Amino acid sequence: MRRWLGPLAVLLICAVGVHLAVLHFAPGLIMARAMEALAARGVALHRFTAPLRITPQTQTVVRPSPDLYYALCRYDLRNPGMRLAVRMGDWPDYQSLSFFDARTNNFATLRGTGQAVAVRLLPPRSAPEQGAIVSPTAKGVILIRRLAPDQDSFAAAAEAGKADRCRLEWRSRIAAPAQD
Amino acid sequence: MLRFVVYLIAAVAGGALGLGSALVMAGLWPASNRLAFGDVDVAGWRSDFAIGSEAADPYTRARVARHGLLALAKSEAVYFTRAVDDAGEPLREDCRYRLSGGTMPAGWWSVTLYDAASMLPDNADGALSIDASRVGAGDWEAVIASRRPPAADHWISSRNAGVFDLTLRLYMPDPALLAEPGGALEPPRIERLDCRGEGAA
Image (cartoon, rainbow over all chains, first blue to last red; front, side):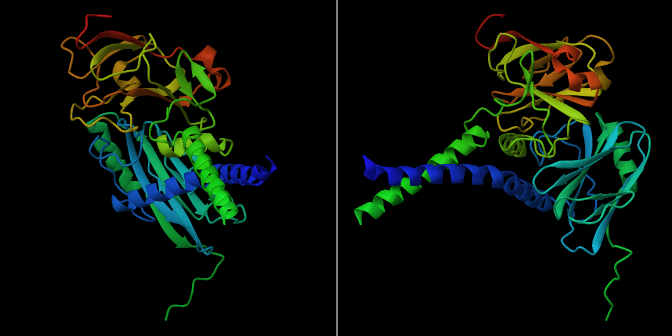
């Protein structure tokens, strides 16, 4: 019996280790694959991509709502000297600006019903600033949702989306590199 | 040599056990029940108010990444899902259902139909959901069916959905809903009307 204790211990350790590793890495891997899929579908880096209305033929992520206008911006703040200037244009009905990190956490959401919203997104480990949000991870996705349950309101939401901004810029207190 | 082989088999078996158990418990296994999770159950409509937040446990986080990616945290929206009718039977494309309810404790709400892969069913009916702006205030009714019902004001198409589920979105939820969902929410009822090949239920 004792000679099986060693293999049993190895079995248990491997089972627990792999179980925890799968749980730890699954969200990041799923999010990374989703971001690759979004990129493949034309969702730009550092720019809100004007969406098509959600239908069975245009859906790119699981469980999208066909009643909402979605605009997506992928970001990559691996360079600590950069930041993202984000603006959600005016919309008379419900709208929100939500931020998701590379592990799928919704780390910030700003509601903007009837008003425009502007905020800066800073790289991980940045010092807090007024009017800015620090991203927990270098990469992530920003999502604007606007209530637009029919074709006419969707067209109006798309028009309002022309005022949306997701722009990478140098942080003012860090000098930009000299241009050769 | 034999001892090495035994340890190798133990390591591989342990790895497979850990992988399989994690995939099943986190709802990532293709055949696992994607709805058997959540800390909130209101009349069979299930939700997890930790969705989207750092507080989500690893199982919820993995499950949401697979079945509800880019979902909002509960302060902005909560999501309830149900895969069975009021009699406890799975929702199926070849049956017709009456979906009914009243005012919801939120600024805006919708009910959307998804197939077993958590995607909108592949049809061009333009009837994927109903929402507060369409049904108006007060009590409402809709029919879920694979073909447009002749006399219903509101229709959700289940064409090409197979076995499906419904997601109730509640945006800008009332504080009472977050504090005591069972007391604040009277969720939609799902009554089976009939199924192909049988009489009215």
